[in-house]
Image (tube, rainbow, N blue to C red; front, side):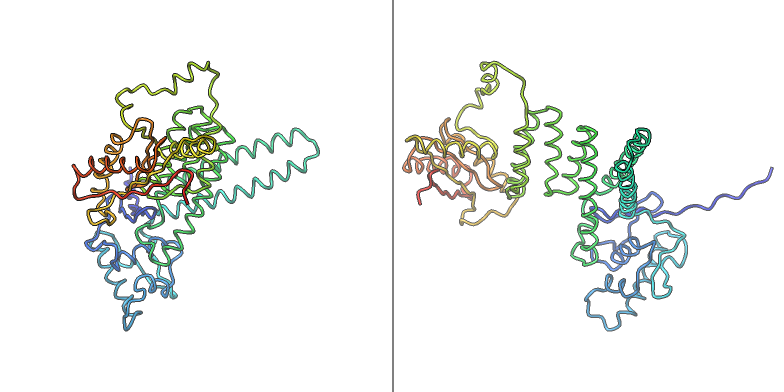
Length: 434
């Protein structure tokens, strides 16, 4: 029996470009002593890994690695950097001498070590969906041109359904590779910023197209999972609407209502921004689609009542969307009655009246101020958090003098515990006194 030769070992570097930069060689983390953000080794490896298939022009690589640094002989400097990088790669255990080589003015990565880059796989999946789109277009054209032949039309529809399923599969593969912006910590570099924009455009199309297919299939559980991931991978692009849609479509109205409030509160508390008008419009449209089962009035009323007696003490705390609705209702009521309602804004500042910078102090003071407001206002008054350092209070059936009394109560409670912080107040009538 003859002894066969062992198959040559396949060496692979797995590269993560989305969200952060990471290299694994043959399954183990690939770490260099100077693998810090601004190192020339780092810059060179990012470029070589990303352009490992096509190679990269010498001038472009020089621009990426050296940039606008004032160097007398940039061509020579690049050759030195490439030489030192190859030495470092050998020290890190990569086989071969010419891992990076120059040919015809193009720098190439050796074909002996395979590069498995997430961004390259993402783009391959995406381009394949574009090819499938062309096939779908041809099928739909043939269906439209069919002369009433049910057999041909049915076969074409089956083929279209098969292609759409394949598209969804590819979109999902691409979608879950995207763990954040392309080389997110490095987008100050021109070439990286350009690639980040390009990949983000592809990602947005992936999300929208896949969501459309999931809707047509009524796969709302998958749509919710999909939307939840999109929110994390690509924040502030309003993917929360997918989660809300899925909850409404699966009749989980309480969860949808809670999620609606959490989204608005998150934007205000964590980011200090108000959700865009389009996001609010879409979220509110889904909230209006909630269909509750028929109930007698007593049961509906019971469901709306507060049942936690301990939580009934002091003012009524609510999320910002609820507060906004109460404010709008109060403004309408004031136009028809003599009841006066005042809006108070409480802003946390340091003892010198300046904005608080420490995240830890923000959280501590904010928690304490919330408690102080709660015990300082009446049960009929409403308050909500607005951003990280502000609270809004709706004081019902009062006057300006009593608003000042409320301020003094809050100050007395708050100063007792935090003499190094203070609260600024602004008060307006809900029907503004201009």
